[in-house]
Amino acid sequence: MDTVSFKDGKVLMIDQTELPNELVFLELENYREVARAIEELKVRGAPAIGVSAAFGLMLASQKGDKKVLEKAAGRLRQTRPTAVNLFWAIDRVLEAAKSSDNWQKAVEEEVQAIYREDREINKKIGDNGANLLSDGDTVLTHCNAGALATSGRYGTALGVIKRAVERDIDIDVVCTETRPVLQGARLTAYELVEDIGVDTTLIVDSAIGALMPEIDKVVVGADRVVQDGVANKIGTYNIAALAERHGTEFYVAAPKSTFDLDITIDEIEIEERNEKEIKEICGCQIAPKKVKAYNQAFDLTPSELIDGVITEKGIEKLDR
Ligand code: MRU
Image 1 (cartoon, rainbow, N blue to C red):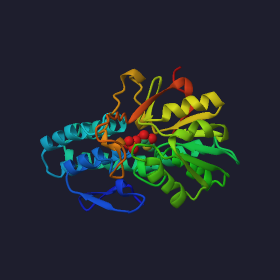
Image 2: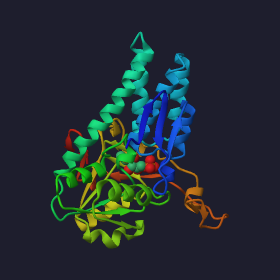
Image 3: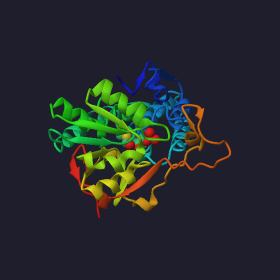
Image 4: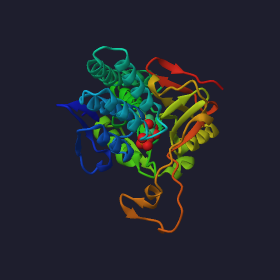
């Protein structure tokens, strides 16, 4: 199943806010709708955001006016600040439009290339990461870095697990619920059980310390990999620190399109989201309306805590 695709002049995507209860497909007809879908987490996960933004630009290019393309790029850039794939994909498409006489065709070709590459790359990440896993391993993952976080099929961290299962490596998986919006419980547990078919246990985020002695390897995704660390879903840093305390190997799985090696972790812009996401669960109020809530969507894990970044090229070490 495709997380996001382009068919008959429209962007088709799974509405991830409805999962796991309902499988709803959205048909988006213009870049504004794509931008809103990214902001509202209907599509989320670094590679999926990049591919969706590229498809949004393809919709804009169909208007036949380069100014609309530039306006669309500006709007899409404002959606979410942390995952670099968004900016990487937009820059790639604009560059293609700039350097060709037939700019509409160039946009279409570049967008299709971004989509195709995303699918090929994830399988390679999965293969490289699966080499690190052994029979009997219990693997912990956080948030959702699965097929739903990419354009489909494998995902990054879950691609590692999926390829291991396809290669008959006997593992079991622990996934965190990932508050506030439960990407782990709603999306990762769903993929692990329904698609990958691996023995899976769901835990609350606060159980990580208690359970870390049972974990052999941690594999998570990333929104931005920089010189000296990574940004990923809030809670990743806690997991990395606990993994170090218990001598557990900690890996990040991410495509090269998530790398931004010109900067360091202090320079990453971390998204702050609406406090409603903390004070409500699935639309149900769970905290006093008057209380303040602080909703930082991502945190920063320094490279000292990371054993390696699993990419399509192999396992890479960051500067320490
Ligand atoms: O807020 P989200 O759901 O977009 O956050 C997603 C993550 O943090 C993922 O781990 C990351 O984007 C990697 S997805 C392959």
